[in-house]
Length: 346
Ligand code: NAI
Ligand code: MG
Image (cartoon, rainbow, N blue to C red; front, side, top):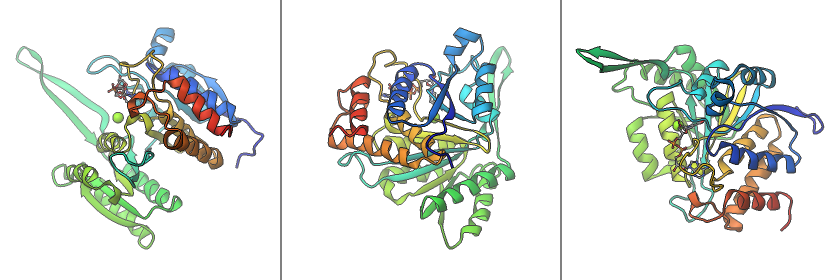
């Protein structure tokens, strides 16, 4: 347990696109509320290519090795060619096997009330392992494309254990295991089979159900409040977590944590939003919510709770909202509103 006087070193990666804008807002807020973090600023992504000719430079890796904790802005990944996703490389480097993405209704009267879902995604295996290549046919170098996924018993066990422990610790009642074991019988069958095995250890504590991913995607839209914790594989988790973010106001509010045994990286679910970068209108709330998760992670849920309350008050009581939420407040105005709530000037 950290006492209130010790500073906790955190690697801070501003990132690409809107990254620096929202990171600046979040650091301002955390510092103003006296959060006990000591920032070690490092680069990654396109920003690092410009500076170090490497999208994931050694000083950044060393910093995370030292701190075991990072708050990260979004990083741009070129589609198709170019370098491999830095986000994926970071997860692999630090074995961040659990991706935790909570989403709950923050603004009543929106599309859905009563949504309160935590999606727990396996973060290292599946179709993200990078066995992905083209095979030339005749004169076409891209005559065919092949991708293989890998799910291991050990990896499935580790994430299932994490999800069930998370559910118990956070007073959750039900876990939905999401898979496609009717078609990908081996690849997602091993995940389902292993998760059901682990579930037996939590027999009386957590209710368990399983759903096929396509049916789950539909049911999320029809009746999202039936879901509590969703446990799923890498790619399905990527897709469903964006869908779930969309149920409760979109990407501008959705935080995510990447958790390993020795390190944890906190970030927004959204990307670098090149379409609005530099305009000063990005919503900092997703990254701020990720920072709140980081506070919980270092046993400072008191701070995490204050942040979540401030976000709620600004959205629901003050009705100050950014453009992605249908409002017209810019990043600076939202930051000021959050600060004013946190400093009790109401
Ligand atoms: P994106 O999430 O950056 O943007 C999707 C849409 O949501 C855009 O219209 C954008 O303006 C809007 N949006 C996103 N965050 C917002 C915010 N905080 N406030 C207001 N509006 C916001 O997804 P896109 O365009 O597919 O990806 C852009 C780049 O980001 C790509 O290079 C992608 O690889 C990368 N990316 C990085 C991630 C990360 O670092 N964790 C995660 C997802 C994508
Ligand atoms: Mg994604």
